[in-house]
Image (tube, rainbow, N blue to C red; front, side, top):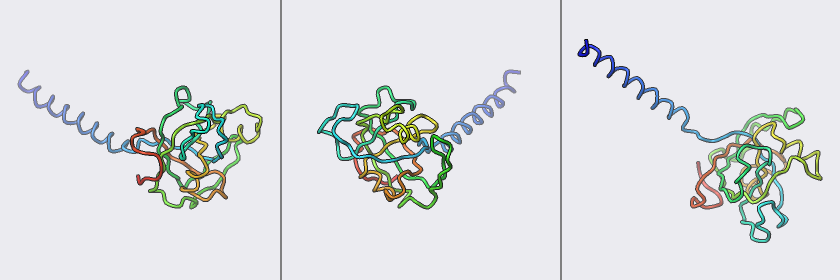
Length: 170
């Protein structure tokens, strides 16, 4: 009986390996998807970089998962041609707005995008957790799409800061 069970175990093991291999292929894109706006740093960011803010920076919403400990993280971001909604439920079409979906920018998180802020309408529209969001520095945004759009579809993932800030290819 044990001898005949061995081929079945081998087959089961091969099936498990095949499923795991396929799941790695399917999930090779470890990006998270959302949207991005842009802002200009004023040297008073929540992460206290003051006048040492790097050239490539972004703000992480205080309502988004990963906010605690987000200061100093490096994030690779890329534009995605997609439609999405704002925090008020207004549908926004941004298909065809990306310069190059294969281009990415690595930014350092130097600030927070607070849900409750003196600019309440705008911040509630973007930073209050209805979907993932990053507020990119103007230069990073301009590498991905025209700032005339104000908001774009985005994919992003945390990367090692040794990758280097600035423009990359995915």
